[in-house]
Image (cartoon, rainbow, N blue to C red; front, side):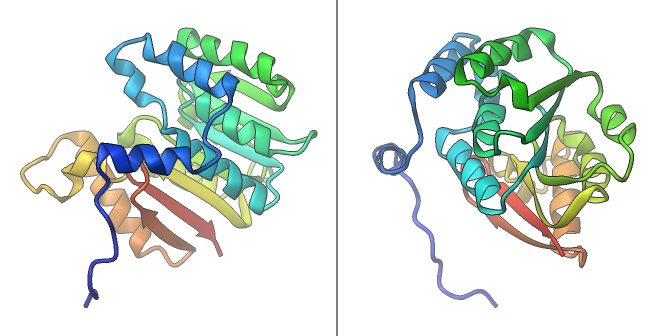
Length: 220
């Protein structure tokens, strides 16, 4: 049985305080976020600033040299992770939209990390399945079509080195995962994935309340 609640609900003012008291921004990240915001409502697909910083800290903490990202959008998360990789590190980005990733390319160049990033345009499942199993990753971030999260998980996990991390975005899905009346395909897929990971003996996992929910999986 769970003990007393150990969390605090964030008001907008408290959230601003939280972001201000971490290393969550620099001019290039801020400019990329501002340009992404000009895309309108779709801009909500960009990860939160503190999430990007957390991802970079985790990638650096495990000494990641090889990373993969499924769902790149305008390149903010890729920028954060690529910066955390060593000079000879490699990040494979999988996406289907040339226009949005084109924005990211410009900022990767400005940040001096473009040489670390390989962008593959096309269905991510096909890109991952085409990789030999001997192609290993240390770190992975999954933030694409929710109905395919399970496929991405299995394809990456078999190529993840022991001790490597996989991060899943949007696992709380704005609270929809606990609303039984909501039964669209994405919500059902996230529910199923969350339940599966919670019982997957191949990994250790924790779900944390960052942004729209972030699950961190460590391969045993």
